[in-house]
Amino acid sequence: MLCSLVSNGALVTPERLDTTVPWWSFTKTVLAAAALSLVRDGLIELDDVVAEGRFTLRQLLRHEAGLADYGELADYHNAVARHEAPWSADDMLQRLDASRLRYAPGDGWRYSNVGYLFVVRLIERMTGRTLDDALTERVFAPLRLTRVRLARTRADLQGVNMGSAPAYDPGWVYHGLLVGPLEDAARCLDGLLAGRLLPNPLLQAMQSARVLGGPIPGRPWTSPGYGLRLMQGLVRGDLMLSGHTGTGPGSVVAVYRCMDGENAASCAVFHEGVEEGVVEAEVVERLSAVLGKNR
Image (cartoon, rainbow, N blue to C red):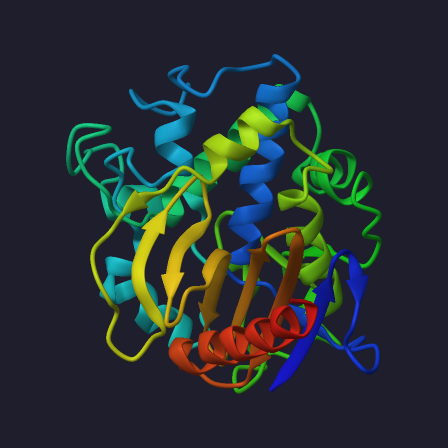
């Protein structure tokens, strides 16, 4: 298990961890930040309906758009397991019957990777740039992160620790898969939530969470909720976490930030396994320890 910890903006991990790892669904948190920068710059409003359907940007970012998810397709999982070539995005959307909303936008909640494919299309359309360039300009350059990149093919994963799935094809992640050091993941979330990218009203909107229920078996959450691509809520004890856990074939990454008064710490953990609860428990332990020292 690898860990990187940032406390009050400074790296406190004993040594640099330059190992490049997949950021899995923490990629979506970065995409949400880029989309919110469009709102910041007046290019779109959160409650504007987007071209991809009769849902708003806010509903897309919060998984309230009514969209299905390709993870529910058995053929998808079988094709990934057989190391087949990824389907085209249009083929995937047709197989999923993605144009048929599963509920009226805003009336429910359902995790959807498809929603973030649409977020990518919106970012590229409104910036006139490739996703790589848009993320660099709107997120990574302002936060001074230079070692994060998009992986689109197996060749792009050379030198990346993919855990027990070294033959994985990132083309199966239709919104794109970011890879980079854990330190950069921790710094990315820390800078974002410290207000170094977005104005306070947008940060508040990002962290305004829809409560999803009570404790999650096997995981430390006691009151989980979902904001604009942030999982947020109480974990055991009195810690309030904001961030995201990402799972893919062969590994898990969890990136979270916690505040205690004026002190703040961000932690990123990578594990070569599929147990989300194990990784999240490590995050809780690390954040509890560092914030305890700061009290």
